[in-house]
Length: 499
Image (cartoon, rainbow, N blue to C red; front, side):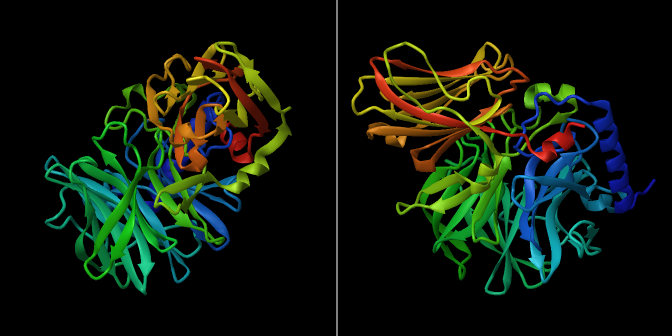
């Protein structure tokens, strides 16, 4: 039986409501990192500030808490904190099975003279082959979307691409629309560049940028934007191990369609940060959000996560503002609106910590908190600083500043009985007098910022409802610490999602 798009969305909404009624407990759910009511979510899509609201779309399976034929979920906010769930925006429908029976994959949103326009990848299967094409949907009210009758607007890849041809991101430059698409060719990741006058007829220009082997075999979810006179390309490379989200900073030549980069960096060094996308808001800020549940990447996800027992899986990172430093590196600073979540302030801790003795840190026993910590290493002899975050009963997640190797480490091997692994990254400020850490804990997600927000490492920890405190320990000598924290409250969309 053939389905219209409206019928496909109605079916999806009914399935979602059944999941919500079936699963009444959500003890693992983060409280202020965005998540859907129930079901599976992955990549953020269509980030845009439109007619007074931040719009957040996301890859969504409303039928089950596992990956499946992708829909687009939708939520709006005025402050990036309190989100209102809206009806599903896109659903794969049989009427359009020639190009999207396999799902409505990732893409973006633009404001086309007051029309909220979505561009996304439609996925179909033809004689055992995956066919990926670029499609268009439009909305006058910003809520209900109609698919363009001329879809797909780009039926297939150019010679420079391959069957892996997805995740369009579109921007306007000098009254011309440009689109970057991720692809793979000869085992190397690439970003392809197109242009259009009307968003419907597209002309291929060039390979915008490509890997020489250091950035994997496929570039997923590319984004391209200008920041203080420079241009930035971000993407998630496939097949590079520790690299989940890369940024390149350089110069764009619109005449040739080529991007020439000078700086390379990691957006986040953690386990669970993938497919970031940015938007420019009404305050002139470049804001970035990513999928925060990508540790076991496609196609198996190794059992997904304990959250499946509660009928959901997946959340998004907290919004960060992107800023350009004078040396070409980027900062990723939590948007200032997070301060609306503060409900309690701890006493300040100031102490000398002696070798291998534990000192309790602020916010002990809390599941959702923000912690500032300064360690003065100029008058100490310690060669390693260990921070233990006990947000899962007797278990602990370790944040380690290895001063001898100049590394920052996130260790989850004893976090929750589920998560494993140790990720490390360079600690730029290891040679300075004071190391400053800004840590967020939100029940099942931890984010650590340092190096003046140039270095971020994050990951999931499925804590449940127990927290027994946090501590600091030093090795190889003593150290001087100062710290304080704020308790952070749950937000309405999270409570709504649990009922």
